[in-house]
Length: 203
Image (cartoon, rainbow, N blue to C red):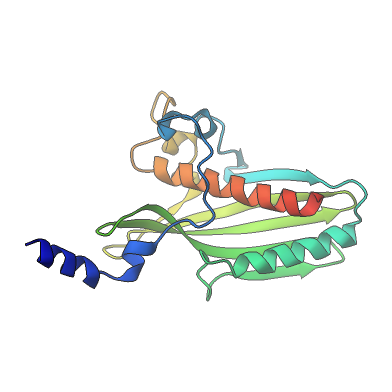
């Protein structure tokens, strides 16, 4: 019996045994992420009814042109990253005069990966950078998920899935049972991207 089980495991697709979020780092010291304050009320902001994550990266002494060139490189590197769905991710706008760069991204977010289970979703979003002298305004918006493609694909917009109304329990004391994992991983991904851009633009 043991040999049969081993043989069956060896026949599984490599994707089912090797999938992971290569960018991900565990930084929390709270045992249960469902109750980590970083994921709770207010963590997913909405602007005019749309989920928009935003940060301003201050880079004193750097010109708009310098920051624009750096952002263009960062965006092109991002669309080539391992988690991206290569045929779908691209840099859509490069406008040096306005100082704006927009990437349209489609990537995999992995919730759980074992020899028998691969739970993941496609994450689609726009990453928008507006450059000016000394600073870059960075936004992650137009977020959509395509989930459970192997059985019956479900499509969710962030506004109806990960905001405070849907991504948390009624008391807003912990992550919702199903949509909560999308909220958690999206926040983790946003934090990673904002941090990497900040590190690159301020060094």
